[in-house]
Length: 511
View (cartoon, rainbow, N blue to C red):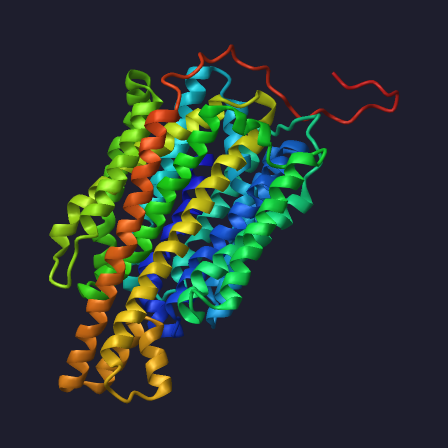
């Protein structure tokens, strides 16, 4: 039940990717707006995860798991019926709030229910594998829905699954909390969202306003300053939501950075590749989802083996090898040209899935195994927050590199010709806009314009994926050097921490 709920929330991270070209056609979204549709969810999700973990620890994990599912289902309904890009972005942000309340509570529930260290390791592995599987099967699920329904269906599918998870949790999940949990750090949550939001805005909108624009530079510097202020606040506040002391543990710090880099490459690649498969290779949404399916298959096969490989070879080798596989996959696809076929990109897509399947379960076990038992909610939230931040930055950085090179290439091609300002804006806004203009023009002009657009897009995609490959390669080398060779042996099972009943009138606790 907890794994199914984690599945639907993480499917939502990627189910939208195959619908991006449809949103270009139906809502006339630009490339930067597509990035915000994806990243508004991840930004709020990441910014509030730490608050969600502390709230779950303090007030009850089951309670916040149920509340989070309710918010997620309601916001999914709003997103499904959005009539504009701005409204869709807003509902996606609300969905992030629901996800931030649900995910840390779900992992804390697993830690509370499974007392035996071996059973707990298997349960965490299944939970982490479910997250990886959800990320991978999102595109095929989106393709199936778009083949029969309108784009809003990719959000409405969340509702019945969330309702089923709510009912099951209500009946079978025991409640638990940390009786001595600290007060939630609301100021820290606001600072983290503000800082990450400013930084993402600067990266995503830089191709629109120019990388040298004072507004972009100011927003980027402002975001870094706010994030620095967040770090200072967490260091000196009495009850921080982010335990900076955890980062003194090398196992913890390298693990959370590693999972962040996995998501940087994976989310960024899916954002780019789903558009490449539709706009350049001409596949439908369903055909695109099917062609991303090998990554899901690789995750489904390899993820259950990750814990075994971890015990045999150690987390250092498993995580390092996984990140280097992701780097190799991105590098292989980054050699694409306008004549590249799907089959030629398939090895890279498979390597992405295998690499993610190796890293996610291993680093999740590393993170949870390195934490004090009474901080499982905050620990789960920290792990998931770094996952979401990595994904958001991947979409922002790789998407902006793609947009910058695409616009540069199109401006060079259009320079000798007088193109009306409105038409040029549409062409520069996205490859989808350029292909729409090319379709209206038809004939030789339309054919030439479509060729220019595809050339410029593939050139931008290659640059973006090569950047992702370099980031993953560096992270892999860091993991091989910095992760401990082995983990500490798990201690004996912890006593269960349960919610105490109210005291009787006589002041004694009921037994």
